[in-house]
Length: 80
Image (cartoon, rainbow, N blue to C red; front, side):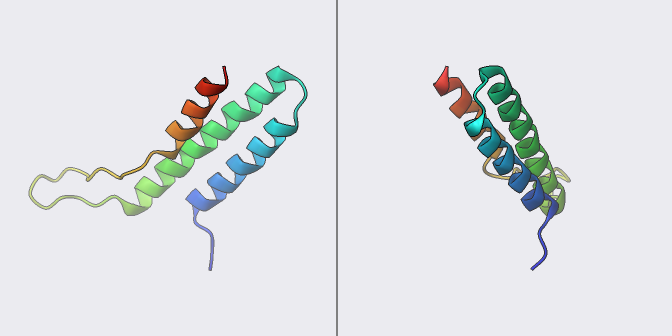
């Protein structure tokens, strides 16, 4: 099965989080975490773009449950 763009972005985010965990310099660690958060945002957007549906009555997009980029953000705040 072929990976979606969202899957590829999440994989890149995971790789960056591994690098962050191995980094000895706190600034480098923060940079990796920040980049990972960006990739998680891209994954969420890619997923929304591939699954958005228009509600027939309103013409508005339906909300997609679960925002994975917020999970990383909350984890970073908890570490401080």
